Image (tube, rainbow, N blue to C red; front, top):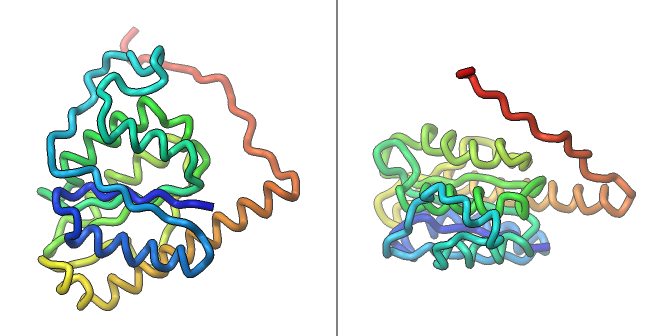
Length: 206
């Protein structure tokens, strides 16, 4: 089994990467494979609502989001990491997730997911809430730890000094590994995924 971890920070090896690495380490010690995909520091185009992905099977903008979508098809779980910018997830990860879930959400449905954020001080819970909404609208079990999934610090060294935060990351990895193994055991025992109900779209303005 494999877990894909998305690093939505403009800094490839910064605080967010440090937090994700702790999660990945716990997953690997539990026997799972991991991959941390950095979204890069360049421009990530936001969703234009063109609907082309419905015909192409991928986003019309062929960049790291499509690379993430390809990996999403093969992964069993997802962890999204972001720094906190103005009490929100980074603009880069927001743009990427808008397009990823719109164009490839079906490949992530029912796969366990978790959000991880890093901050110097505050705004963490608002950013976590924002990221978790992508999972809950897509029928993905949201994995928790023993506290909110956050670390604090202005540098990787400072993050590692946040002993509680780092322990939360390890617990998150352990909990995701347990859930993935439980889902696999259920699948082998013949437990099927829920039968989808035909979607109904209700407009409030008639």
